[in-house]
Length: 401
Image 1 (cartoon, one colour):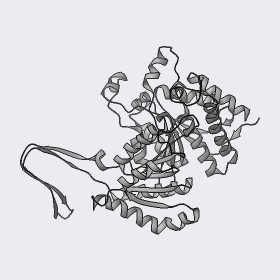
Image 2 (cartoon, rainbow, N blue to C red; image 1 turned 180 degrees about the vertical axis):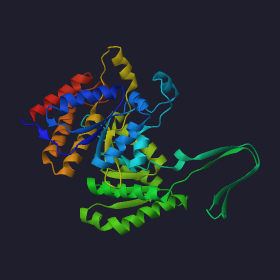
Image 3 (spheres, rainbow, N blue to C red; image 1 turned 120 degrees about the vertical axis):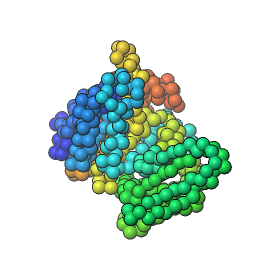
Image 4 (cartoon, rainbow, N blue to C red; image 1 turned 60 degrees about the horizontal axis):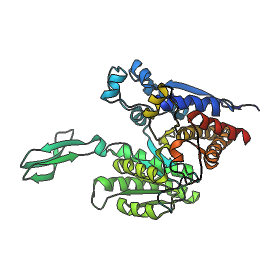
C-alpha cells in the first residue's frame, strides 16, 4: 500500500524522559509505516534546551507561526533538583509557557472517552473540553505579608504622573494582601480562540466568572466576551447551530455536574487550572486527556495533557519493563495530522488520523491496555501490556482496518 504523502510539514517538538521513548515508538510503529512523515524537527529535550540557551524553544514556536500546525512531546520544566540532575546553566522557563506566550494561545483540554473506563459522574456521556485562559490573575500576582495595623491601597500612576487610588483594606492587625492583573488584549485573544475552536469543533461554548462579586475585574471578562460574540460570532454560531452561554462560575459548576457533557467550558486562569484536573480525574485518567493550544491567528499546537512520566523513565533506564499509557501522545499526533490535512485539503491524511484514533480505542475496548487503565476498567479480565506491546497491538488493529 502506498504511503500517504504530506505536502506541508508539521512542526515536531521532541521532549523528555519516558514520553520521549514513547514518541519514538509511536513514530516507528504507528506513523512511518503508513505516512511519508513530513516534519520540521526541534529537540526540546532539556539537554538541548540547555545547550541552546532555550533558543530552540523560541525557534519551534516561530516555526509554528510559519507552518500553523505543531505536535509536542511532554517536556521537563526544571526545578532546583533538575538543575542539579542535568547540570543546567540556569533554571529554564516552562517550554509550554514560552510557546503559549509567543503564539498568544489558549489551552483546550478534553478527555478521550472509551467504553470500560467509566466517568465518576454517571451522567457524563460526552467529553467536556476545558478552555483555560493561561495568562495573569494569581499566576502573575504580587503578594505581601502585612505585619500589623496600616492601610493598603491600589495605586495606578498614569504616564502623565496623575494617580488613581483604591482602598484595599484598613488593617488593624497582621494579614496578607494580593494584587492581580490582566490585560484586555489577552482577554480578547482568549475569547476569539474560544469562539473559533467552538466553530471548529461544532460544540456549544460556556463561559463563567463571578461578575456579581468582582464588578470590574471579572465583569471586564464577561463584557469583552459578549462584545466580541455580538460583533463577530453571533451569526456564525447561529449558522453552525451552536450556542454561546454565559453564567456565574458557581452555577456553571452545578450545571456541569448534571449535564451529559459535549461542550467547551471556558474558564479564567485559576478556574481552568482546577477544573481541568477535576474533569480529567472524573473521566478516569490524566493519561487519557488531550491538549491543544489554539491562537486567534489560527496556529495549533497539539500535545498530551500529562508530564514526562519520570518514575517510569527511571525504571526504563534500569532495564525494567514499564506499562506506560501512550494514548494522549498518540492523540496529539492524530490531532496535528488531522488539522494539517484539513488545512491542506488532504483527505487521506484526515482519514488516517481517524483510523489511528479508532484503532487505539478499539484496542482498549477489546481488553488490551496499559496497567493504569487495567486498574480502573470495568471490562473483565483485561490483558495488561507493556509500553511497546500496547503500541504494537494498536499497529495490528490499524493494519486490520
